[in-house]
Image (tube, rainbow, N blue to C red; front, side):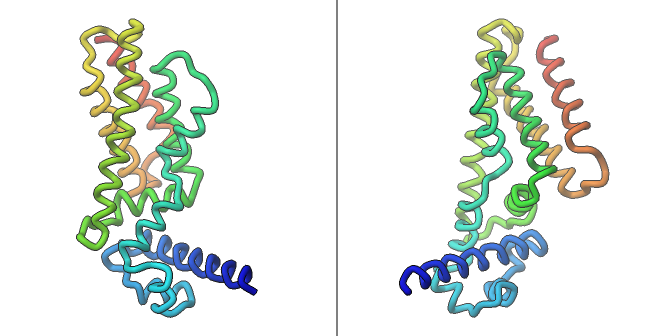
Length: 205
């Protein structure tokens, strides 16, 4: 009986998170109330408060259970060695684009974090989470660019910090524009051209 109760509680929690994810993506975080989520999940507001102290906690739990495209790409490529740091950097960026296109859940949560979250006090943890994630991803880029420069595959005049900042802005811009209007261009095809052009420019400096 206890086990069944725990399973039921876990199922209720998941249904609440599922409903929140869908509503946040559809109408934004600030415009979604706990009552909206409760109605969509088929539970009472009390059931939500039993699992989450407030909407901020619910939002954090939704983000915690999701694998963001950047994290998924790194995990995927960590399973195979790539000697050339520039090739690894390209592979990681292309994997992010592929994951956003093909993984509906990863795309939805990334869209919530990128376009549908207003950084209010209610979800202030989102601002901290996003800053940390961006810093970590740029740090990986910078390390690989620095390695390429030390190995001679990039000219000595390339600043890894500035180059990584440009690459992040480029990747972020591709994703934001595609999420805003996915029919406007092929994210993987155009993204590959943009990434290759940028890397060729770095090599030619």
